[in-house]
Length: 95
Image (cartoon, rainbow, N blue to C red; front, side, top):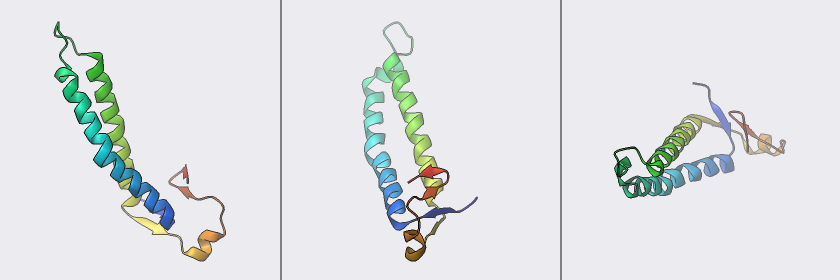
């Protein structure tokens, strides 16, 4: 797995997003899934609210996995090198 180059602020931003998704968004989705009556509509079909909640859950879990993979083995820019650039690229994403 290739290393990701990060600045300290880039790492903190990604780690903050990861924590937010794990602590807040997962709870919101779990609540949405519970409120959608377990996916069963009155006539036995899967409810649209349940399908939407499952799609959101898949997106959030995918983003969590992506963030974990980005920050698992980062290489950090040393501060003098980092000052030379006005933009940083982390695994193809503009930071």
